[in-house]
Length: 148
Image 1 (cartoon, rainbow, N blue to C red):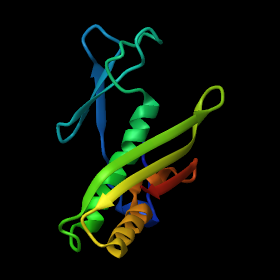
Image 2 (cartoon, one colour; image 1 turned 120 degrees about the vertical axis):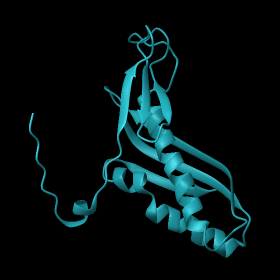
Image 3 (cartoon, rainbow, N blue to C red; image 1 turned 90 degrees about the vertical axis):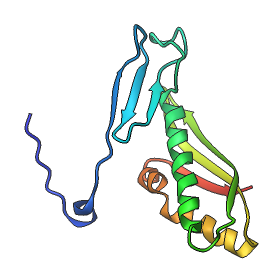
Image 4 (cartoon, rainbow, N blue to C red; image 1 turned 90 degrees about the horizontal axis):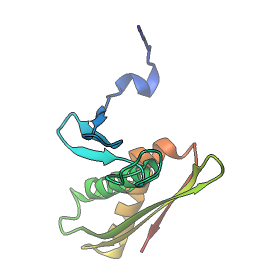
């Protein structure tokens, strides 16, 4: 199948990230591998739709994606100005509703330390504004950020 996309504007400067999945042994789980060699297991709970309970379901992966992206965004924001900056805790939650279920909101909370309050607030706000995954998903559902 031939596919040709002509990108204009900000999309013209895009990059792609690929994850490939293959079956885990004789299970219904999928082993996902990224181009840089990292891996995850996607699965359903044991006994649900052939699941083995070996890995994460889609909503868990989405929460992990939002939380992991924000974790990295916080560290990127701090790298030049706050060498002692720490993320002491970060929680990512997605709420589902409907039938079939869909994500209706996400909440990300973080406890930060290692800098004065003004710096921590600035870093938190910069990460909120620059979070790639959250910015991509905001048109689909509400995403809120909170400092613990």
